[in-house]
Amino acid sequence: RVRCTTHRKSRGMWRSALTRSLSRHVRRTQPWRCASGRSPVSKGGALSFLGADRRDLAKQERRTLLRLRTLVMDGGLGEGDDLDVLTEAADQLDELFMVAFLGEYNAGKSTVINALLGDSYCKEGVVPTTSKICILRHSADANPAPRRYDDGVEEVALPVPWLDDVALVDTPGTNAIIHGHAEITERVIPKADLVFFVTSADRPFSESEREFLQRIRAWRKKVILVLNKMDLFDTDEERREVVDFVRINGASLLGASSPVFAISARKALRAKKAAHPSTDPRMGHEVAQWEESGFEELEAHVKQELSEESKIRNKLLSPLGVAETIAARSATKLQERQEVMRGDWTLLEMIDEQLASFMADMKRDTDYQKLQIEKVLQEMRRRVEQFLDEKVSIGNIFGLMDGDGFQKQLDRTIKGDTAESIDSIITYVADLVGKRARAQNAAVMEYLGRRPRHKDSIIGSLSSGNSFYDNREELMKRLRSSVESVWSGVDQHEQLQRVSAGVSSSLTQTAAVGAGATTIGGLAVAGILGDVTGIVASSGLALTGALILPAQKWQQKREFRKKIEEIRVNMDNSLDQHLERELRRVQDGILEGIAPYRRFVAVEQEKLDKHLVALTTLQKELKNLRQEIA
Image (tube, rainbow, N blue to C red; front, side):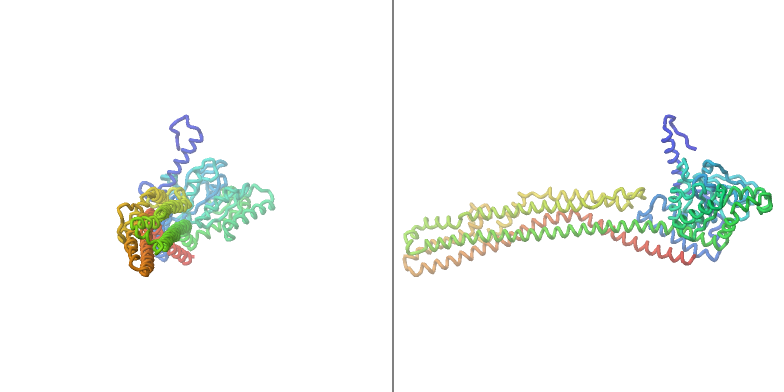
């Protein structure tokens, strides 16, 4: 009983408190245990119920169940109480054969049990009367006192011989206003070896019953349908109609092999009580009630299901069904993770492809800009050769004799706008690196943004350390921040300075450069100027022979072309080297930023592959066990 601590709480809040209290009870790690640790359905020595010839098979099944439990725990694959359910399923092999009577409230579950036992051992009523799990088992004592356990379980021992190896479980009805009853009842389902689902003839197979049956069937339990309260109908036609309805709908949910028994438990119980102390209801004065109840067919089927061979088979198959259900759910989870991992690998491949495309695009654009520099140098060569053709001639003999004047004219011709044009191209290339770095960063961020968030995909995970999605979400947050910081660390001015410094250093090693040259274009021009002063000196030879001057002019053109080509090659190589270094700096920054993500994906893929192999092996073992048991 649950009492509200504050009288001012609303009735709705009181119900929530009740539900939470019941929830705490039904979710314990070791349910249905008394202070001594004994389960109310355990019986003597280990596996004594099964017999020596089946113990090895049961032990193999137990080992398989516990290995599955370890896998579910290590992989963070469990839902709710799956770990406890697997533990209990393994322990279930040591316990009595459990027959559970399930259904909605007021379907007559308690009356059906009483009719089977021959007396009113379970409380009956038109309102929800069973508020706890009641386990009925055999006792040689005439009137043993009921025993109550934690978690809302009551054990009643009865002097009914056929209960020697069997425990009947009466459960609270589902779909009652007391929602905690459903939680208690559903806690029984995985432990049941055989399920009798009782539905009332006045509301057969309601939508809520269909949903409840699907949950029962999900645990792969053997289910027998009991259609109670057939005495509510007056004609055979009405009875046939409702029986056909239940049979058709039952077959769609449970398969054609699930039998349907149409009964009146109330009439059967009345007949058995009238025959007391005889166990034969035909010995009393309510024989007609017995014949009208249809209970004899159900009773015969119960005896068949409780035969030694049938009990052993179902006792071994029941935990197996639990394991198969949890294994199937685990396989679904692993497949979902596999899909996520495929997306992660695709993302990494896309980033790698983007980076490769980034480098290729920059290489293509850099090559194009180098062609522009070559055009600038070729234009300078054209101007100089034109100058030489015009100025180094006999007709300009007086101009050649003015050495300083000639040198200044030549310097101006060489310089032109060469330095400014080259500097403009270099600045553009360095700026292009920055723009492409920003675009590349944006592309990576866009891809990261496309990845789904899965933080809330697993509810009630075992621990944050085992949650695949929680770990992944946290890593993705750090990854986005890390990649975003790559661009924030890219300083375009510093990039230009590094490129310029590297190219300038290379140029100064190939020519004597004046102190006034400070840019790449200035250095290139200065390097050329340093090598053409000989034209002025040699021009004085024109005074000694008209034939020498044309040869000297040709020689100077050749040397000038050679020098320009040397400057061009040097600048190309230097640009390639230093621009690639800057591009690698950006690329490495992004790669370093996603390195934890790449490692995470690799580690998780390894774990996932390991879990998939282990689970596949276990599922094969479960299948082989089922075939051997069946």
